[in-house]
Amino acid sequence: MKKFLALILTLAMALSVTACGGSDDTADDTADGEGSGTEETADYASMTDDELKAAITTVEGGKLTVATSPDFAPYEFYSIDESGNAQLAGFDIALSQYIADYLGLELVVNPMDFNGVLTELQTKHADLGMAGLSPDPEREGIMDFSDIYYMGGQSFVCLESNKDKFPTLEDTNNPEYSIAAQTGSIQYNLAEEHSPEANIVSLAKVTDIVAELVAGKIDGAYIETLPAMSYQVNYPELCLALEVPYDVAGSSVGVTKGNAALLEGVNRAIAAAIEDGSMDQFVEEATTLAAGNTGILVDGEIVAG
Image 1 (cartoon, rainbow, N blue to C red):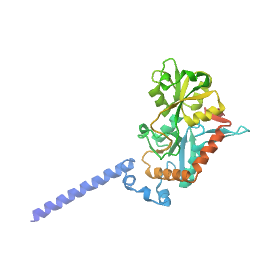
Image 2: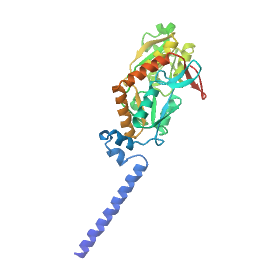
Image 3: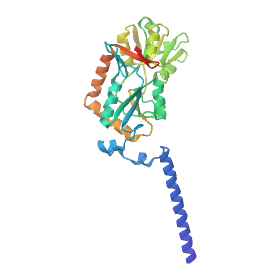
Image 4: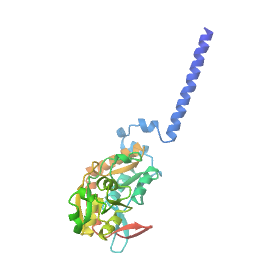
């Protein structure tokens, strides 16, 4: 009997050691930001706003760091007043301020090229990416996506004088043509899909694309419809020649991967902005402002766009 009890005690001790080892593994996973019990089990959707705000963590405490690419009017751009003063504007910028206010955080906006926005999210140096991002499944490995806050479309753009060259998308697929799209964008993927035989030109800024089009250096470009319409106001020689089909419609906020509490907070803020009419107001004001003087960031300086 004593031997039997001793065996039972030995087994119990062994199980205890194994259980402790399992706890250590879980702690290691949590420290690495993966397998976090809190992230997996916390029901953020059932929390009150105050509870959710207390649960949210950001890159810098008390601040909401947003990466954006201000060459995508009316989403984000520099508005230049009559005195030559430039101010970051656009309905993404207005929405980012709304989200920050809703969550009780101080907004910090860092402008950069579009590809940099993706990198900042991937390396978790930013909390949010707001640059007219489409919720493309191919990007889900580096960010989470909020609910859609604006529905948009895609267009093939050329000069009005050249529109007869492109009666259909199939006509863009010609090795004689140079077709541009923004680096790292959905539009670049669309160019590869519909114009694979063309000379596809990758440019960092949409404003660069517009400038190349107007100068006649490229034959056409893939640009999101609303920004294309915005640039057409200042450059009436541009033509939105073709509608480009795209399965993933609309724009979302990119949220740093795995920050479920922040994602819930962003979705609540978006819902509130749509519900109270703020989102419609942001789009209307930004579209009107983008019809005036705008600028772009070049080598750290803002110049007329």
